[in-house]
Length: 257
Image (cartoon, rainbow, N blue to C red):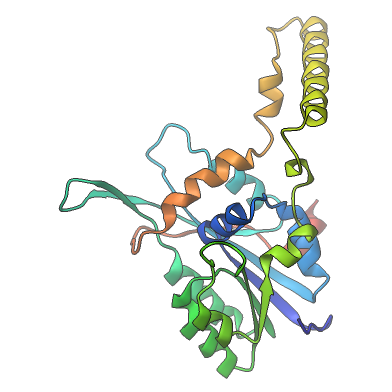
């Protein structure tokens, strides 16, 4: 991939598609490291993440991930899903974000010189072609090494650059997923859990309040394996509910902190 450090860049992440590609390759994504890696390829102006939410549920597993991304440099674009029953009586969920992503890419083409799309959806081929006519360079990130391949051939051919997700995964792969079922990993987890229980007991004694469990602490962390599971249901087409956009540019959030 040819990149220029002076280029103004924006990245667009199709949440459901990227999750499916990463799972097919057997790893989870560290989004904080992803931002750092992309920032080395140019001047990162915006980082968009698109996902649909099941808001009628009492608890949405993907909500912790959405909130974390919103506070850590990503502009979140979400909308509620629609549930319906097809002609065969099967329950279906619609929550496609292609239109929202396409509109934002076209707008970003007015102030960016390089668009990086994390998706293999062939429907975006015409979008890539349109921004190229505006003089914007394009990069598609997906994988050919899964079975079946996650990137459409026409999208890969249209982009100026194609990055194989399997080849760059080491830049933003969560390290705890490597051999996570080994005895060493399990022992490390047991030690962390015991430390959490000891800290909880000390806190309860010091404050005179009820017991503080390790689950109270762990609930504050992003549970990617649960969070991303909901995104597998996003692939159906069409939805019209109001889109929610949240978040500020990474540089603006850093200065606010």
